[in-house]
Image 1 (tube, rainbow, N blue to C red):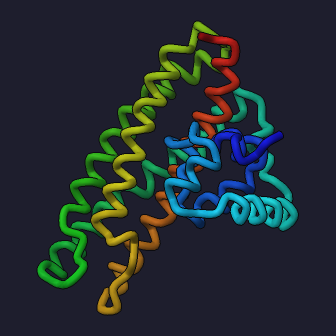
Image 2 (image 1 turned 60 degrees about the vertical axis):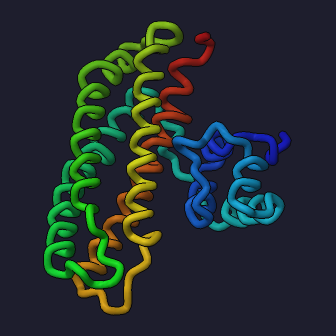
Length: 222
């Protein structure tokens, strides 16, 4: 297999530990997962040979996650229990923290003005998105629906994933790439740590849906 011309999404699906390498280098393997490794590295100014070497080292460091080897029903259950519930638990706390930082530190260098609003919009988008998956698409997949039967709802969810990726990019912009200022208080630091975890979890969440669950379900469709 020519890994340089393989898409990031396929590489992540074949080698789950690859996601750690992609996260380190800010390579989008979920919403931008259809780009080849060569194209993604070119856009980011990275050497694909170096990334391939890191992928090989990561593969030998510890066993790949077994989650991607779950069956369709079990994978849908895992996504709901781990990622959907995690978002419902963590995002409101991050919104609260962002509002506090914006209020208490208004006017200070690096304050992420507008962050709470972006997170509030993201929560509203995610609640709507997750409800559609939980009530419509995931039950279809659990019943064994495949190909054309799920093609359109899957494509709708993937388009919404692109929107979630745009929200993550806004968060990076507002926070100066999640760089914590020297004068930041404990709440500010905890907020950025939480945002970094949110980004990693959401990217892995979208990857599991786009590149594993949905890819299997739509195999053979148009």
